[in-house]
Image (cartoon, rainbow, N blue to C red; front, side, top):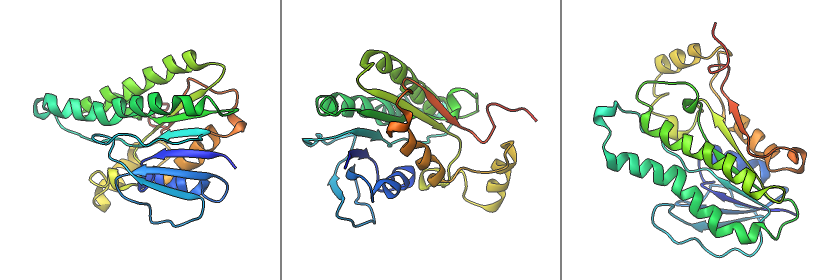
Length: 227
């Protein structure tokens, strides 16, 4: 049974990934709050990415880093401290985790790392300056480390559009906003965390053994199509 470290598996996409892996993998979840699930395959360690030291873990075949932020403001209202905090959550947190668990991953036969970006790195949208800047850093990290780690460790990222999670609740806070955002996407749908989780499960599996250094958009057509 493979062991997967999930950072941020108690809510949203991270929890959907945890749910889909739980029966077939040993999961070590690091997050501020414990997941609702209780299972013999699940170990929870309370962890705050901004402040806490990472625990020692002896075995891991995959590492998934889920923490992120959606801090949408005009550039004139974004402070440098907000840029720094978003960068620390999205990028420096991922780097810290990768550096810490790299020796453990190297002991696995087919190790992999999965990070998260956003469609806002490819599609310029108002008020996305901080999140797009941070997630562009993630995309650069994935490509650089993909080359550095080859052929031993794979690393990829998923770049979702708006996903129906607590993190996006302000964007989806009423029916009108849901309708407007849905209409903007050519496929006329908002992502469900379970859909993103299915892609995540595939990308850390042996079925994706030829894929590394890639950013996989899940955009409901908003970046690709103009209708």
